[in-house]
Every structure is written in C-alpha cells, then in structure tokens.
Image (cartoon, rainbow, N blue to C red; front, top):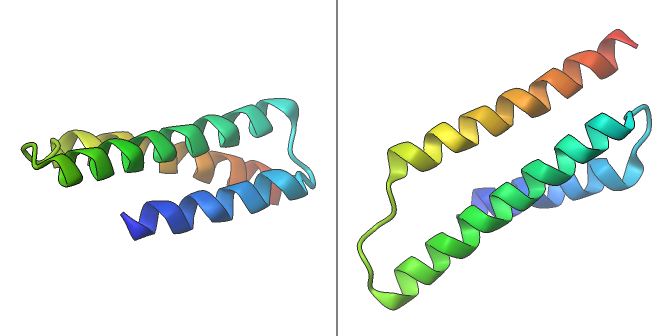
Length: 80
C-alpha cells in the first residue's frame, strides 16, 4: 500500500505543476488520484478490521487501467 501512497503523492505533484496539461489531462490525473486513494483506504480498512483480503486481481486490473491513462498523458506531453 505504500506504493499507492507514493504514486498518489507523485500524481498530486504532477497535477499541481500542471505544465502542459489540458483540462482533460488534469481531470484524468485527479480521477486516478481519487481511485488510488479509494483503493488504499479500502485496503487499510479491510486489513485493520480483520476482514478477508481484497480481490488482488481486481485491484491490479484497476491499477493497470489507471497506469495506462497516465502513460497516455505522458506520451501526449512528450509529443507536444
């Protein structure tokens, strides 16, 4: 879960700089930040309550999709 925190902090920094980011890119980054925050919060709640572990395959699928979105933004920024 520390990786999600670190990634979220990096994305917040990217969003706050917003150099070259379109409104759509900023909205996407914000959406990804919220998604990682939600994943981390749910995992923390699950582990602290003793509930069964979350569906890791589902979480990985969500994370992979979010990473693709961020990669698309990075590629667009490089091209501009």
